[in-house]
Image (cartoon, rainbow over all chains, first blue to last red):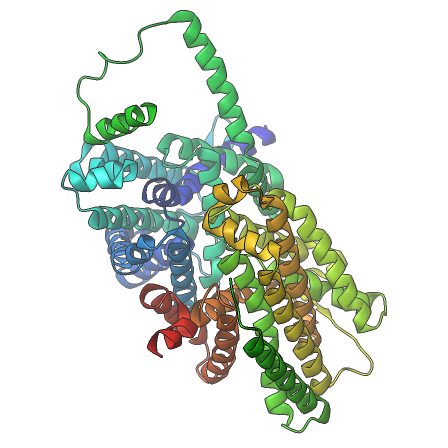
Length: 322
Length: 308
């Protein structure tokens, strides 16, 4: 029974970890930017919720109405004025600029808020719910719901709105997107703004679940990396599953060694690519299956409406072939 | 490349004279302890800056985790002198050996990746080491360790050691870049595939560069902590070491030998000045570095060349 309870808590916390990875997944997968300041965005979100709760006396969940737009604009402005310029000269200058932003934000928060540990407490922080003999913290359930809603909203935004489609088009092929009238700089900045806005949600989760310091950003940045690397870049569903896997890993690894395990896990995945080997293996299985069942069905006839990016990539392929 | 031998020889004489003057200043203690302390820090920052520059500016291996070697060598020094009662030079040697061994093993993982993944992985390795040292009773966990030496070396001795280390690192970098290996390293940064196609063993080159950088960074780390006297996981594996390396190389000029020298002098003087405004130093250094990357990516060394 105890084991089951631990596992359920791990899964519930998975939602929080998924939100931590969400923004990183956007910036790495879609903007192709390693944003080393993402951890500081998360901590900034936590401080924003804490201050709004203290000043206005509102529920921390309500504070998102203000902290999400605030971080969106912060992320947008930083991207459009600083990072976009550096991205033009390569990925390493951009990496170093975000590193600089991370250092600046960290020390600025230290100056403004002091080095004390902070926590967002509410009346319902310590309530547990009994379901079928298991006692589950209400907070974990609420945070899972919140992260589910955030992930769903982001998914809908990316697939159903013009801006979302523009972001994905820019991610696929910058040149083609620009040729079809999308402002690349603005779109990238919007994507980074959204990544920062998810950090506001993540910050609230971090603040309500754990305590944080101005210097905690690096810690959450690395967790975000682990989630993204497990879940795959720009893949929303994968991020959610990765969050749950990571949550279970933390619960099983315990407080002191859970983090070390996840670091080692990240190093192994980044350097040895076991997951890619697995994907290749699965692909090979799939392609042999396909060869057995279907032949001659591939190619034209199925895709009736081509987006410009698809068209361009096909052209590229055909020119490569000739 | 054709070059004129006479000016090179003249310049070499100039450098040797400069080295001897600086050495003499340290031995006699003539400039006073404050100046020597500045010199000590400048020489060490030149060393770690040159090494980061070798990695990032020449070999295209931007690392955010060189503090791993500073922490490892600092802890080796503390363990050797305090736990095992060895004299501090043996602590230096043990730090060097441990860092080399760690870098060698790590290189098998790190050389499989490049670009931002290399940067992230090196950082994660350093963070993992910091977390590990935080929870290991062998190194007193978060309580830190002291470094003992009798008699404790005076600032003059530290200065001379830092000067020699700095000169060695500069000679190593210059000679390396002139050698066949150095040309291969530069070719590798410009175009990895083309370099590989013309017969450069990219993995071997990258490993050698990584090991050299690890070794010199470790020695500089030992000297830093010999001066400080205590080491904690947060100070040894501090990301701040990387911040200073990035700043020094970006300000001075990435991919030049003179860049980190200029960058170190500016860094040490600026951080000394900013010590009057506690909490602001990293903010200002970070802002300066960002401005340099955006508006003057070549650094001040090439800026001067462009004006003249």
